[in-house]
Image (cartoon, rainbow, N blue to C red; front, side, top):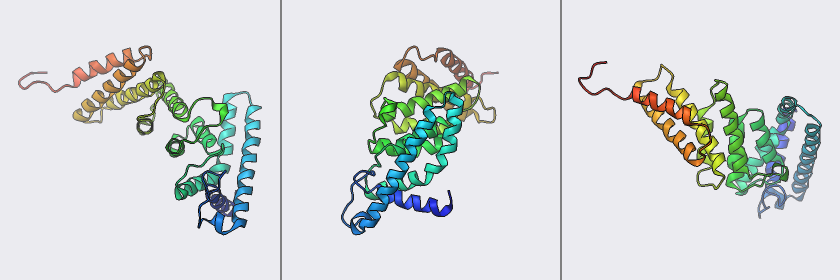
Length: 256
């Protein structure tokens, strides 16, 4: 997509976000009210992007292998970027949440391809404005986003790989106060506790930082255990407790 087309897509999406079916309601003084031709152009662009999404969903449905689906989504995502950016801008200006299937679908695709930093602003917008997910996802947005990211983190950690702790903590803050199944929240707390434990094992960290990080790890793992007693954190927790005991400052006069 050329720079000119990307710019036009952002503008039309921002205008579409103020339309009744684009993510908000047109208000007096808005471009949609002052210029009906702009209204028509934005509506036509919204219909075009919806058709593109329908086409891409049919293409994905025909792909069997998960790895190939992810590769296809990674290829598709750049074409939606200007539109989603424009939707967020327009919705913010109109004080409304962009509706329709495009934005929440792109949010999930970004998680699927591992672009968590790119997905979280969309997730925050979706939750803030109670944007419904397309029916094909079955679960609500908070549950789906939390579970997908937590499971991705646990998978990476099981393989001995790090996962971005700031992503996990941002999800925790994002879902604070939201009602969801205990098992799903337990997965997130397990992922956070495990990543804090891995962070604390870095020999470059100062002892005080290591101690505080292990304490946070223990708290997260204990919360995961209390939420779901079969979440699988008991062995991790025992290791954290052992490292905590070793990290405690020695009493004055005690030799090593």
